[in-house]
Amino acid sequence: MGPDDLVLCAGTLPRGTPFAERLEAAAAAGFASISLWGRDIAAARDEGRSDADLRSMVADHGLTVAEVDPAWWWLPGAADVHVDPAFDSEEVFRFGEDDLFAMAEAVGARSLNAVDVFGGTWTVDDAAEAFCGLCARAAEHGLLVHIEWLPWSRIPDLATALAIVEGADAVNGGLNVDAWHVVRSGCDVADLAAVPGERILGIQLDDGPLAAETNLVEATLHHRRLPGEGEFDLVGLLRALAATGTSAPLGVEVFSDDLHELGAPEAARQAAATTIGILEESR
Image (cartoon, rainbow, N blue to C red):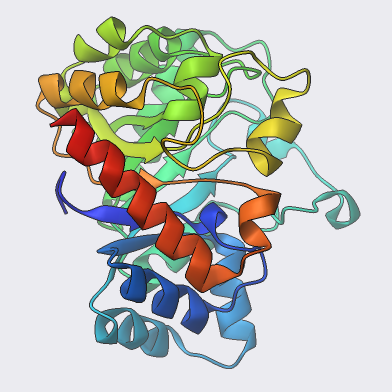
């Protein structure tokens, strides 16, 4: 996969969209790849589909699987936290490391997305050591791993995420640059342009207002906007990323209740159309 490949991220489609419909929507809209959450793969298996079925379906639609989301257990102490399923509405903590590695390998995924969920008292050096271990284990499954920083987390910005990645110095480890988190963490596009291109393994486009929302978690999961329909400087962001020489594919991740109401095919179509418009403007 490369910078000319568009990825339809799982969150751009309605939560309950079946596996087959995800593939159909992505292919019809012209995407080269999709991303999946563990819950998407589990739901397909619950429909009676084998892993071989899933791989065949992806290939038959001319697609690949870019990434599987999210790796939440990798930081010190995180794996020891128990979350009652009744409070796991997003079905994040249902799947541990062995589960997600197996799922990613089953669908031929390129990478795994890593985030900080629980915080803690660990240092950047501690996190780098933990990330190095995660990358080593992921490599046994043929996976890249990228850290996505979240402004409300203990990995809140580009500087912290990059320090962890560089401290780990894993050949298959890098960053996932999400436009929403770039803007909400106050990251300057000039800072992005200075990142070594080989460290940027994933990119996710979305849009929103420049003024930060009161509840960032609520906003990022329900009220993102399609690329070009908000106030983010996505053209500047794309140009900064291009300056790094990154070969990361370009994902579109628009968690939006309004977009989801349109249904999977239309959500995918609009996501592709608006993203292509921004790409053309940036070149």
